[in-house]
Image (cartoon, rainbow over all chains, first blue to last red):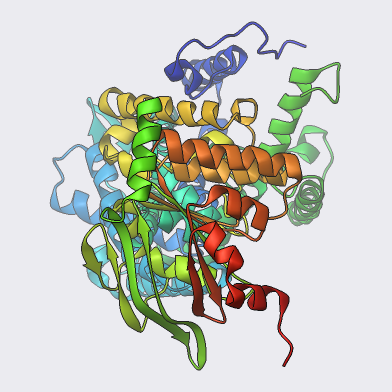
Amino acid sequence: MFYREAGQFKTSYSADQALLPIKQDRIGLALILVTAFVLIPMFGTSFFLSSIMIPFLVFALAAVGLNILTGFAGQLSLGTGAFMGVGAYSCYKLTTYFPDVNIIILIMASGIFSALIGVVFGLPSLRIKGLYLAITTLAAQFFLEWCFNRIGWLYNDNPSGAIEVPQRLLFGVPITGPEAIPEVRYLVILTIVAVMTLLAANVLRGRIGRSWMMIRDMDIAAELMGIRPLRAKLSAFAFSSYYCGVAGALMVFCWIGSAEVETFDINHSFLILFMVIIGGLGSLTGCFMGAAFIWVLPVLIRSVPSALGIDMLAATTEHINNIVIGCLIIFFLIVEPHGLARLWQIGKEKLRNWPYPYAN
Amino acid sequence: MTASIAKADQVGAEPASLLLDANNVSLSFGGVKAITDISFDIHKGEIRALIGPNGAGKTSMLNVINGFYHPQEGTITYKGKVRRRMKPYQAASSGIARTFQNVALFKGMSTLDNVMSGRSLKMRKGLFWQMLHVGPARAEEIANRKKVEEIIDFLEIAHIRKQPVGKLPYGLQKRVELGRAMAMEPELLLLDEPMAGMNLEEKEDMSRFIIDLNKEFGTTIALIEHDMGVVMDLADRVVVLDYGKKIADGTPAVVQADQAVIDAYLGVAH
């Protein structure tokens, strides 16, 4: 009823190709951005910021990274956790060697190392497809985990085997380390995630994004249109791993504050993959929806018994949580196998045509 | 436009302007001989048909021309250059475009994006500009969009511009695929059964597009087709293959009268 594009005429190709061609979408996004940048830091509690919003944003960024590779370029990967680890460990090493360089620059730079490693482990994709490729990316996962464990240089030979984040300032305000307050860390992450998502959206609608989707949908035809499979696939691995690397660095530096090898184990990779599948392969909005579903929903469910005043053992809450989340995953995948983003899209289509269900 | 028609006709009749020359090409997979010692040429500006019963090696021949298969023997001379072991993307950048027997569209993308994908080689702006999507990258995108819209107009598919191609009816999918190949602005367009599975009206539409494409844009076309009525009407010259061998080559009238061709299609008493 309110969501109509009637009367919104496009008179130039640039207007037609805009990221959000429909006015209501632009208003919606503006509201979300105002909420995220102004209202949440003003009114959010410390728990809400550091246990819900910050992890949500970090996971959403990692999901964007994996979705570019799997959803847009069609290359299945199970090495996301390890690529995030590469970002985190290289950021740690960089800040050890260059303590005076701005930490934001180092976080962005650490993604480059992740991208390089991603390219190396993307090489098998030229020969291997689908599930078999997923198995070869497992090699990346296990090999890199071994590195994080056995190469003492990576964690400065810390006897505990963990990396501990030092304090770093931005404009005189601590943004990493124990002194950094949640509001500041949240705003830093939010800015990086918002900017990087916009850049990804731009790449995906241009020549490079199209070349990835061409490889995904029909690699033979793509080659005939002049796409080089080598370049397209490896650039997708590099771009995707860059995003995962930055997400990993943010995760350790602005969220948990320390990390060891278990932080980036295979379960972590699966978690991101689930977010992408539940959210919707091939959709950037879906990454945020998936991250919210997998991370935020359990936190909310856990807080239900105490909010209702029911006295329940923590373990029981956890079991109920697992049951509910499991059922919801099955429910959503049956209703719409293409994920929450597709469900959202169908809803919008229905609204556009309302009250005529079959109009097009 | 009349001038270009006249020119195209003239060029088609002139044997001196060779675009592609296949010389004694042989291709086999293990013990199976797909193509045996085939030679033929394609002139600039003509419509060249490849016909023959199923399994005659027509599609294999197209695959050789655009670099999917590398023949064991023989050479392909394209635009005066002898090619050896060329990759498909090199064929694309040298001006060879192609449609497929089974529609090979990018199913997850819209009609517009599918046709835009044909412009991949015409777009050069790197990652930096793509990420910002301002200035040169946007100008390039819009300039190519204009070209693509011309093709969309030409093929009369403006109404399905934003629809995902996976849901389109078969006839329209074939048309989008032709549009995608046209977007490459090819010098040589290979059409693998552009009218398979179409009804009469769709065939007439497609024939019209092929003729217009040839006469107005001067694109050289090599097509495989099983509908003999269409082939004989459209083609300037016809090659007939059977069991991987060339059995006839010439104008439609000559080929139709050829005894070997009649035998290949109708069978012969042993």
